Amino acid sequence: MFNKFKKKNNLFFALVVVFLLIAPVVSLIHSGLPITHDGQDHVVRIANFYQNLVEGNLIPRWGANLNWGYGHPILEFLYPLPSYVASLLHFIGFSLVDSTKIVLGLGMILSLSFMFLWLKQFLGKAPALLGAFLYTYAPYRFVDLYVRGDIGENLAFAFVPLVLYFIFKLYKKPDMKYSLFGGLSLALLILAHNAIALIAVPFIFSYALYLIWLSKFNKHLTLNALFLILFGFGLSAFFWIPALLEGKYTLRNIVTKGVYINNFVNFKALIYGPWSYGGSGVFTQQLGIVQWMALILAPFAAFALWKKKDKNYVLILICLLFTLVAIFLMLPISNFLWAKIMLLQNFQFPWRFLGLLVFLTALVAALIINLIPKKAQLIAVVILIAFVLLVQKDYLKAKDYLYKPTDFYTEIYHSTTDTGESAPIWSVRFMEKVPKAHLEVLDGKATVKEVKRSSTQHAYKIDVEKRTLFAENTLYFPGWQIKANSIPVNIQFQNMQHRGVMLFFLDKGNYTVEAKYSETKLRLVSDIISFACLVTIIILLSFRFVKLKRS
Image 1 (cartoon, rainbow, N blue to C red):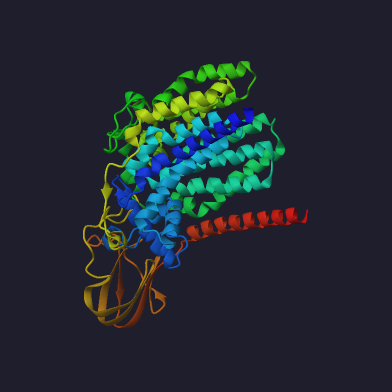
Image 2: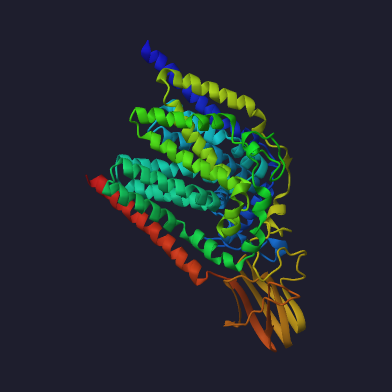
């Protein structure tokens, strides 16, 4: 009788999980692209990214068709993981739009799956389900999915609990394989969205220290946790090092300066805000009713755990500390910090810290539910899930859909797909018209024939009758080089009439001219670091596999 009841209980649990995995992405199963703030631009970026991959550029950094055809370095600063995944999907036959929607859906499905996987390691199935549900179904998650259309941020949420899962596995059994897979997970988090990674990493470090403390400072755990972090940052070095250090060549600090001022959150909006598909300051910034209930009960839960000598009370206190910091940074009272710290200003929107709150409150809620008797846990969880679904039923759908032909995304695009922060500092923020020619004669006399053109390589045959000034109508950015008959020519890119465009002179004669975009020394070093880490991981896993096979 007991086994029969248990089987029915497990079947019901499984059906609930399947429903929760499918419900948030049903609106994506549509022929059109959901109309969001950034959805269309993401498809265009992915199209440029895919074009680079097809041409053999394994680390795409230059969007050739962006900015009215003058090109743009945004791919260097844009989180690449969603584009890699979408490009793979497009390669195997999905359209660019469908590939983008699948990645958006994966962000939701993997978030729930990985959060459940992690929480289940130290809590029951029912508390783990509640935590995973709240993490995935928080109002802000649907703002990301169906309002902002932020493909990177949505995907990054999946990898936060996955990193924590491997750190916990290290705590239970310090093993190099968990360091390697944990490092890979951390790298995926960084590559999915740099801002979310930067927000989440302090908590990840704190969680690792918490478990090291629980282990009474076990030497093997400490070393393996350190290796995990090093592998994570090393594997993703090809992206974050150039994105961080070459940002000085862009308008980033100029464009983002002061943007935060108009994007602070009113505390009342954190408690409740009506659902809206509007822009920043219009869409809802609420945390969620159940999430607020969890925060209110958190101090009492921490006290109850302390009385039971359950060390998880420390985890709740850590969550409360991070919660206070996150809320503080979202409110106008923190303006003095934002004004002084440029790194904060690069976030642009204080409400981004909602992403951290979504995670923290989900974890706290799971810890609280775990305190009630096990027989009542599943009932309580189902009631809370049903309540949230009833309240948020209008959040789980797209406003409308966009229909564009494929060439709209793959041809010249009349935008940079950002607010201009990635534009070279010596250029204008946005170009305003398509260039007359790829290689234009500005002064002098010459005949030009284009013989090759890819995203990062342009080749021409030129017959110059007298000294001529040319405009290679591509924005200059470190890495671009022009050679005439294999000899580098001097590039001018600060001409006030052609700001940012590469100009050069050629004397009378016949030339084979090549403009090529390649890795700078910094990018090359970053690539080598990532490659070395990848090879190290493969070798270590191979040795482990061989050793296990022999034993």
